Image 1: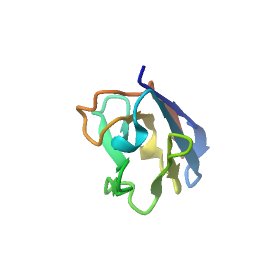
Image 2: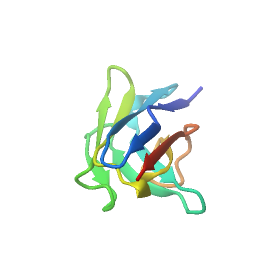
Image 3: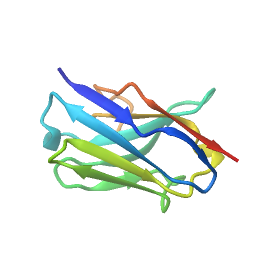
Length: 117
């Protein structure tokens, strides 16, 4: 059974940091890209960052470039999203998925990130 479990969300003040984790199981981790997405209340889901399982190539949305860093630990089948210099507009539910696109087959349950001003 494919599972993606996010953790690490919480409440932080603007300018602070959080590290999200996406623990994957039930599939060949190296064969998939893992994407991070977020959805704020009343807004559409948007892609945040993505990392290729094979090459380690990374992608970032313009809104998070220079502030967020995606990485993966293949020994732990886990992808991380280090989020620094957080802004109130980063407030959203963050999801990981088994692709860089919205049509990803598998999604986690999400973790809430709230940034206070």
